Every structure is written in C-alpha cells, then in structure tokens.
Image 1 (cartoon, rainbow, N blue to C red):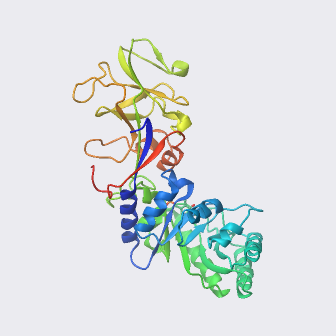
Image 2: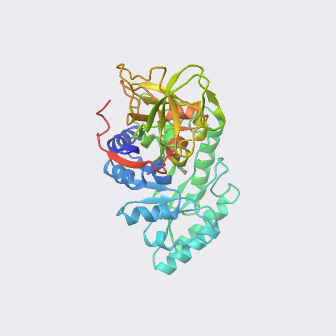
Image 3: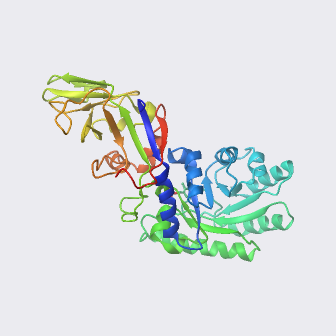
Length: 388
Ligand SMILES: *Cc1c(COP(=O)(O)O)cnc(C)c1O
C-alpha cells in the first residue's frame, strides 16, 4: 500500500485487447493506442501487455512517444501522427517508426531525415475527411498523394498507410459518419490511382470498431476501449470489457465537525448537522479535478461518501456521516482505504471513471488521462477476471 496509488490491471488490458480483436474479426489488424502515457495507465507496461495479447501495431501521437517505445525494447510496428515543423525526425526514422504526414512539407522533412540516417522512412498519409483536425484537405489530397508517390518511386520513402479519423463514431446515425466514410473511400481510390500500395488503410477508433463494421478496413485503432472504458455511455455495453484503473488513497485523518462549520476554501459547503469528516491526501496537483468539489463521491468503508467543499491542490474532505461508521458499523479510522474510482464490482458498484465524467460534464478519457502527479502506479495482473 502507498498513500496514493493508481492500480493498473494489466490482465484487464490483455483481456480487452483480445476481446477487441475478436470484435474486429479476422483479417483486421489491431493497433492499440498508448498515447498520453497510455491514457494515464503507463505507456510502456500497457504497450507490453497489449503486444502479449496480440496487438499488431501501437499508436502514439508524438515522435518522442514512439521513440520511447523503441527505447524500452518494442520492435513491432508503431505509428505516430502529430509532428510540428522543424522537429527532429531522425531518431524516429532510424528506429523504423511509421510517421504520419499531412503535408508535402512534412514529407520533405521526413525524407531529409531518412537521408541523414541512411534509412528509407516509413510514411503514412492522412486525409481529413471531416474531423477538420489533422490531415491533408480533400482539395489538396490528389496532388499530395501524386507527389508522395513520385518520391516513393524515387526510393526516398515507403508509403505504408493511408488513413483518416472519425468525428462522430460513437453516434453511427450522425450524417457526418456516412459522409466521412464516402470521402475516405474516394480518397483511398485516388491514392491507389496515383500508384500507392499501402500496407494498411484505416479509419476506425474504438467506437467505430465496435459500432460500424464498414469502418474497420485493414486495421482498427483502439484507445479507450483497451482501458475498459466506453467511448460514450453504452457503446461497449455487454462486450465484457474491463476497466483497468483503480485510483485509491489512504485516508489521512478523521475528525468530528460541528453543525455550522464550513469546509475547505471559500466555505462552499457548510455542515447542516454534526458530522464526521475524513481527509483524503490527493488533489488537483494529482489531476483530481477541482470541479469535483461538492459533486463527486468516493468509496470509503463500504459506501459512497460525498466530497465536501473545494478540492485543494493536495487534499480534499469527505463526509463520513454523523457517526463516521463503515458498512459494518465500525468507526472509519485514519488509514482506511479510499477508492476514488475503479472497475465496478458486486461489492463496490461505484464510483467509476464514468461516474466522475458524468458528474463533471466531461468524458472518462479526461478523468483517467489527467490523474497522475504524486499518485504512484502499481501494476496488478488478475488476468482481468478475479476480484469481482
Ligand atoms: C486517440 C486516437 C485514437 C483512439 O481513439 P479512442 O476513441 O480512444 O479509441 C485513434 N486514432 C487517432 C488518430 C487518435 O488520435
């Protein structure tokens, strides 16, 4: 035990990767997305667990993330997709990373890096089909793929993939999804006409993988579902995905509070009756969102207990009830286990990361990705099935 830790169940990660591979079906490669430190779960341990469970590819945002995977010994296919002009592409090219280009300027920079390290860079081309984020615009796409194909014929790079990203995959009836699929099919056809022979063509994120088989193409890029969380409420219901992260702490202090006393900065909560409060030694310095004050519950002594007053940088206060008793009628003592969120079990149905997201009007992605700071991480391996 430690004062504040994130328990990450690598067995759950492996289970989820296997389940998602089954859902994607035969002939579809699995890319496990481990950007942003594995959505807060730890990039390297998650990457290893994912590979063990059959992830063909790993996906990250930055060159540095990709190179860090190589530094810890990963030798398989890795794709990254967000660079800025002037970045040093050489380590990633030398490491055989697939780098995504959105513009001919990027292609030129990647080619220069290839010359510098005497390697043929692996480049994937991204088309913006309607997310209006990264990727070549539709108007620029024909010229972009033609010029890139020419560079490939000259032996300066290998074009390994063509891909795009969905804006509304969690809402398959949204008209934007059909439009993106149509635009993507057209863009792939244009790329093939220009002579591209990509190893992989891909479009789907977690939600696309689960809800819309036609988005699966050669490969699916699964992030949030790998961690056992829903891309949007209900999307993965019944699929037996298992949340991998539990955020917990030791209760620092327990004390009585008299009616009329205010709690934490600004006294945004005032006790209406005598009660017992507990002090939890984590705060927004650890990514426990300040907005959780007076809005979120945590699990202590066999029940959910409300956060009272504002969350501070290092700590927050919870209401343990008028008698401060646990579910068995014993006084809750300092050192008691506080679970901020974790996988739901029969014994502890909540709070989950999704409960936090709902209460804070955000998404579970933000809850798990932001929590960190002075929490330590501890890795468990239940093979995703015990303890519930
Ligand atoms: C983050 C990301 C993903 C994964 O999305 P999930 O919704 O977490 O499955 C896939 N592709 C790209 C380009 C991404 O940036």
